[in-house]
Length: 78
Length: 369
Image (cartoon, rainbow over all chains, first blue to last red; front, side, top):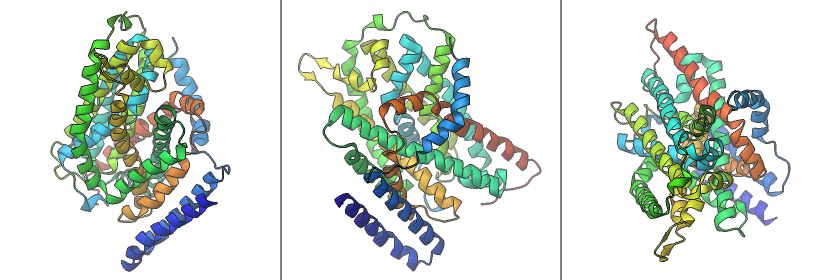
């Protein structure tokens, strides 16, 4: 519970620091990207702190590069 | 994007050195020793030579596009959509790398130094530091590297000198007992960890330097100096600990520093080694995070990446607890699929970029940015 509270407060702090100068400068695209990333980051942090299953990008790399790594291994075996 | 930021040649050299040493110094002696046994140090020299060829490729790309960042180069070479796709591949690479490096850091701290503290605590602290570095920008990171370099050098020289009395040459013999293939495999692992990630330096490599003259040389010199540090550490860990113990230990250079014993007075100074590692891994993590934030900013057409540093850091910290579920997974990933993955991102994609760029340049078409 406290962890989630901490994460949300941190995210709010980040928003407070970064969003005002961006809004003042009229950088709408940056503002959207920042908000999107912050939302994703907060969600992910909460998910991880709750031990919820999060998709692992390395599984994708495993799926893509398994065959070439096998080939490399065969090639370099004594 | 990098237009406002300028760093000097010397700062760039030190950055390249720190980035090359990065995580390599602590983990690679083990990988090298498990493949090339007592010839691990020869494998690291072979890796160093292969690295020079790869760096030459990056320098050639930098020469082709002196004033733009990696995303701009890719779009100029491959066209808008393919270029964006390739940029996405690099963003993914830096994202995975950044999370992995943060995990390395946390795992090292919890297994070797402070076993009772949860891993998340180290990752949040260290990741926070990295994010602050990226938020402040490239120039600040470069100056930090310049300031920290003498300290790194001092720590390295002290620990290397203290280890000299422990060297047992019997551990290094026989020198030519291992075939070419294991050495090639080991040097591939070295290149994958130490040099191929340098591709992310193309995000600012020629564009953010205050002088273009000698920029390529600086990258090469930084990479070679970093490589020499690793060769020395590998040699020391083979000759002091032996090939077998080095290959079974997850962090042989840390175990190595525990061996230091000068007159029963100076001993247990392994934190020197850890300190060196904190310095170099900071820059490795910072430039992965930089690649992630700056790549995303450039992909979406934003001028400044710095506002994105904080949320990107949150994502990296969250994912660093996800990417490696456990150490077995980590070792398997690093020694098998990571190598073809790093080769395809750090070697094949840049080769394609160079080829496409050369073809496009021929009719006199000029890329402006």
